[in-house]
Length: 259
Image 1 (spheres, rainbow, N blue to C red):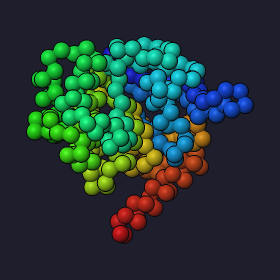
Image 2 (image 1 turned 90 degrees about the vertical axis):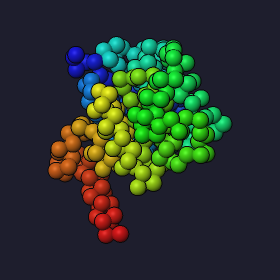
Image 3 (image 1 turned 120 degrees about the vertical axis):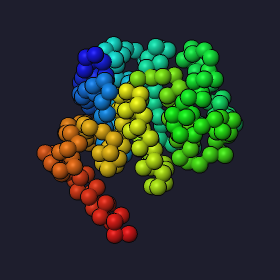
């Protein structure tokens, strides 16, 4: 298995609008996530990190450069069933990402149907166990679930088609602090157990440091620095913006400890 079997971006630009109304959301993004790796995109709101995920999945159709996933080039505006069998996304808000009138079973069955997988019962039971819910949650509605339970369902929905890559868009930012650690630990365990590849977006360096081995720091659409988690934890940054984020993260941690 080669390193190229993961996610690879080279000189990727993403924009919205045309001519004088054009807004460049991502500028010349280049990075590589090896198969089985965990890579974080970090930066403030509007830095372009979530837009990169949308370009990969076809939700941001105006882009240029080169994107490859599992060794295959991604082209055009529409991703096929084969792509989504390998790549799934977990969105930020578990309250908005689940239909209020659909049971957990319906949500998971629909994902299986779209993926062309038959005999859904065994797969649904297994994935609910994998995310720590179990069969008792199968026929519940979202309003019967806590925020953490809803996000576990959202993770189960992403996993039910047995993908090899998860794109994680701020997966804990809408949750209470007490629940965030549970979800992060779950995602860490799932990556180890299922040999998953993660590309994760977050504005929180502590979250990225918990989950990822390598990090790209984004500011105003550009990747300003690539560093590994060891350097991040040692507060070793070359770019002033990265150092600013690290200093702010350390200050928040001190305030949390003093609270």
